[in-house]
Length: 128
Image (cartoon, rainbow, N blue to C red):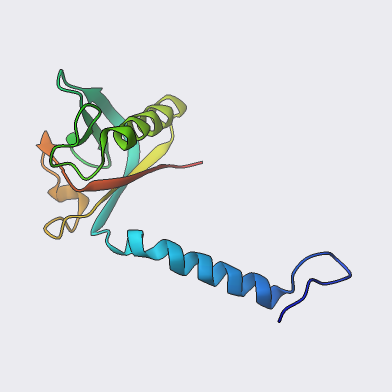
């Protein structure tokens, strides 16, 4: 059993590394499914009259989710609203965003066709 160090009040380095390794291992399953992630400035962000969110982040403009109904999209509407917020914040701050796609046919960002619907977008991040 590892004990806290009495000198600094911190765990020994071995314990910290073991905890980080477990945390990383628990976080990898969702990212392990990523076939491709596309990063870039949010050069386009919009919605259509049906609530479908379109964006371009290192890709051509493509639909990633709907704020109204899940339909065939991987993300439900509640997550889509968060995606939109993340993309908007990135766009306004001039920061890059990354969209992760889980589609075996998609292996590089250049394969995202202009105005295509990418049902497999499942994770969106913004750089800090």
